[in-house]
Image 1 (tube, rainbow, N blue to C red):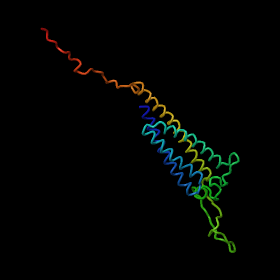
Image 2 (tube, one colour):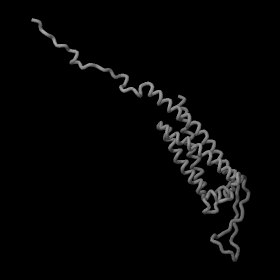
Image 3 (cartoon, rainbow, N blue to C red):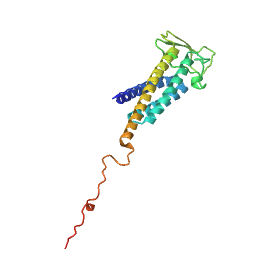
Image 4 (cartoon, helix red, strand yellow):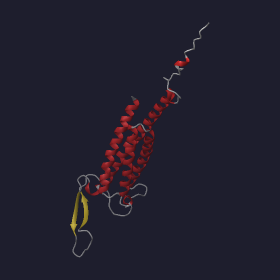
Length: 209
């Protein structure tokens, strides 16, 4: 019963992680955040692998998922430091877009309550865009804190997944060991009985004269 409840909990955690990862992937695509997009893609693949391993009793797949969960925690800690300008990092840099564009988080312009104002081009100014961005006002929460909340949720689910993955792997290993102890390494099944052929049990009858 304990192993079943642990597996069911891990299946639920993996499913929740997939939903959260897909939601985050959509908004990272909208903001052209290429580094998070790649990381989310790998995360989705490995979570699916862990989900498959949990359902199909494949402890090696669950181990891979557990290792990735630890790496995923580290990645999201980095994102928190990035958006909070910790350790020399700057949220205004183009690090997450691989320095190929000046895009920032989608939430910087579309957060709760945000109103984006644009002004037409001034006469005599020629740019490649039809309008120039002025400012974003009225946001109920700064975009960096929304990103931090996303990363914090990812860290929480990853930690839970890591703990339950270790538990499930341990339970699966114990089940395999108990099976081997009962008879998994026996050369013949326990129900096998060596019997002599029936014709050997019949002795010839000699007629005495």
